[in-house]
Amino acid sequence: MLAATVDEALTVFRGVRQIAARLQRLSDVGLGYLPLGRPATTISGGEAQRLKLAKELGRRATGRTLYLLDEPTTGLHAADTARLLDVLQRLVDAGHSIVTIEHHVDAMRASDWIIDLGPMGGAGEGRWWPRGHLSRSRGRRQRRTGRFPDGWVSARVRAPCLSPMSEPHV
Image 1 (tube, rainbow, N blue to C red):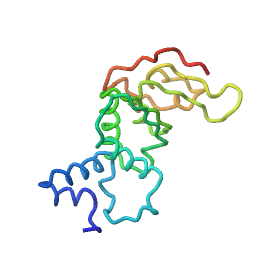
Image 2: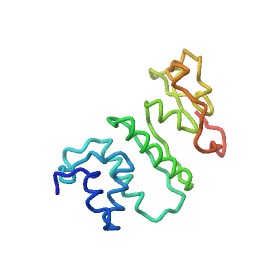
Image 3: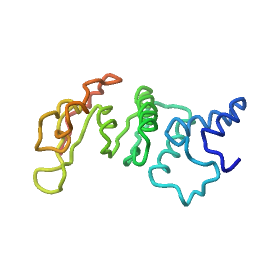
Image 4: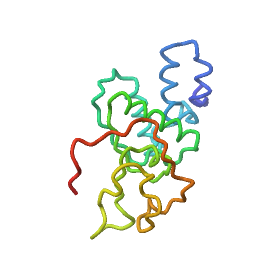
């Protein structure tokens, strides 16, 4: 059984509610491919973050948690990225806040706010740009996020944008 992936084990344990719920959370965050017996020392940083996120999803929700994630989509297949973004949106819908360091265009498209730190450090970098959704950056070629082809950037937002309590001070 330890050679089985999370998704394979999910089909085996579908009728065992407590086990199936835990396996489903792992699958929901894009870890369905992970063998159950994989040694913890071989898990990547992104996988470790998603394991922690799956554990958090099993806790009683307070609606007041700030999640900080560092490139959680790294190494994920497009379908798993979409599943992870759905989970993150569910957390936002439940009143939580999520801050990610991310380069994946789908993750940026799903964001309510983007902080573009620019391609380099130093003077002129590290500003909030743009304020609002990724669609506002189209055509601004001086910034990396403005260089995405129009077909990659959609104005579609799955949830209403959250307004910050005050303007950022950078």
